Amino acid sequence: MATDWTQQTERSNLLALRIITWVAQRLGRRVARWLLYPITWYFVLAVPKARRASVAYLRRVLGREPGWLDGFRHVFCFASTILDRFYLLNGRFDLFETRVVGQEAVHQAMAEGRGVVMVGAHLGSFEAVRATGHDVGDLTVSMVMYEDNAVKLNQILLAINPALQPNIIALGHVDSMLRVKHSLDRGELVGMLCDRTIGDESGRRVEMLGSPASFPIGPFRLAAMLKRPVMLIVGLYLGDKRYEIHFEQLADFSKPGGPSVEQTIDLYVSRLEYFCKRAPYNWFNFYDFWEEFGQHDAKRPSNP
Image (cartoon, rainbow, N blue to C red; front, side, top):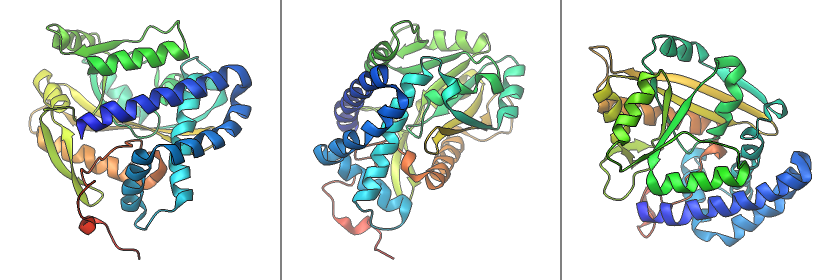
């Protein structure tokens, strides 16, 4: 599973980004959105593994057999967030209508000056958080990720805006954990996407949308070890130019008597499930997430 998503999904992500970035730079958002239609159909028809993964997810979240239009809407939502990524990372926040939910929790956590471990997912637009600066305040975010993924993200950011200086902490170095601690000590947000495991990484099996899947334990153990609050951030794309940003505190490991690491992961997954049902076409894990490909279809729900 891990090899599949790292080799397949990220390559198609970068290819889609390069195409859409070229269009956005030269034609503007209005024209670019029209061109997303043929681009989306191309990816729906030309990437069968991603299509199959989309069907497996949509079947669960919609509670029915998805059709081609559902698959199109799923990939179109993904393509729309990639297009908007170009504008968000270039500071064009004026193009969007953004509603922020739970900003009080961010203010409270940041006011304590201990930094916050911010956990996200491949759900909606993580970059849309940048558009909340005028509502939430000046947020400094350092992203923690595996080194290969850090290289890919740097390629993506440079393709969008060569002037960007991303704060990325690559795992696998002797000073990685020290850099995370220093960022938190400065009162910053340290962000991690926690819905994919890699290689032999330790994972916790948790039921999501009716079937168990593996979620990484490391980010939550790190927050517990450093005794920091853990906050979920989700940036839902609601169509056209509308985004809805949600901040929710999941745990505060600096205080005694709170949830365990395992309970925090379970809560994280339950909230992901909630937001998937709220905005079903925002889930962008186009690989065999539930590890069901090649198995019998016994787990698939029947049509209502």
